[in-house]
Length: 319
Image 1 (cartoon, rainbow, N blue to C red):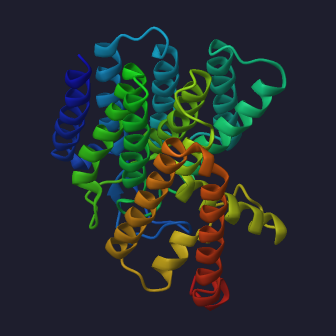
Image 2 (image 1 turned 90 degrees about the vertical axis):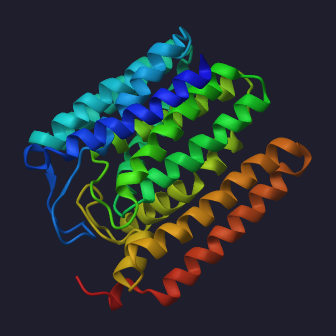
């Protein structure tokens, strides 16, 4: 059943997006704005295909322990699709993110300070994934490699159903990449990036609670997105900027604005994501080296951010 669920996630995403693209004139379009790196409108319905695949996999797996997590992600996908089509106030979206995260984590058995910390982590991951969805192939690649890493590690720990859910997300994202790899024919949209960020956080917490992996494993697996978004947020806070406003100062955006093609960025990002996944395997296979691996990864990211800061200065880039 697990193999069937994963295969269905891939096939349904592919078929859904192929069918939708035949009616491109009727689809919600992502028009270039002050945050965008693209210059022509593109359909932003990739999340519909991804979450359709995930929904079918969830139904096939019929796992009572994880069903509420997956249903919460699908609810966020529906709300975000409405946002893609009609636009919703920022405040309403944030209230929904907090409410869904809180309800889901309460179901998982968290309360008190652990619940508060987990809600903040889930809401931040939900939104940072959305912030990082701004270049062809980037968010889809992170889903393939990040969730794929968690799937393999879950199967190694004999957590078959958790691994199957993670694999279903990874394979649905792989099918999406067929249409999103540079040059992209369509974009993911909030209906994909919001639930993917939510699932990255909540499935990570499930794995920690079930003692499938150490908390450092999902942190490392998704660290390329976590580091870029978090460091950028802190830098904007330091400059006194309105952090809720659209911008183009993420490291990946600066590289493209500095002359990198979307394809070059995607290949470089995939290499970094693969290294992050390898680090997640390392802390699992050799737990005695865990803090050394984390320190080495931190030093690596520091060196990378310093290199980009020195070579691609925000003040030198055109608006």
